[in-house]
Image (cartoon, rainbow, N blue to C red):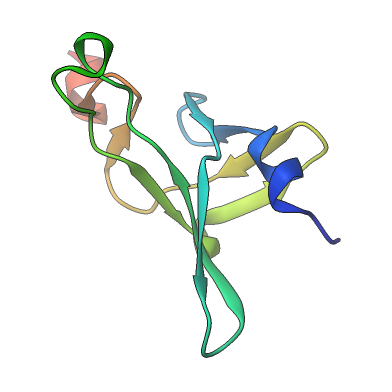
Length: 96
């Protein structure tokens, strides 16, 4: 399947493990030497209307992508932290 950057930007990214909506693709990291896409990047949400900067960006490496569908991209992050647009937390904290 071929996909343009414009088409990727319109797809919502969802974590398969937790069902969290991570956001929409904002940028793509490309390895120009090997001519391959390395990762998808979701920009962090701005703080206080952009005055206080932004939260950390979410970087999704290509091996972590499970499926690129018509409207969504399903990812499976290998680390134990789950990143949302607003904050980072661990699965254990959710179960307490």
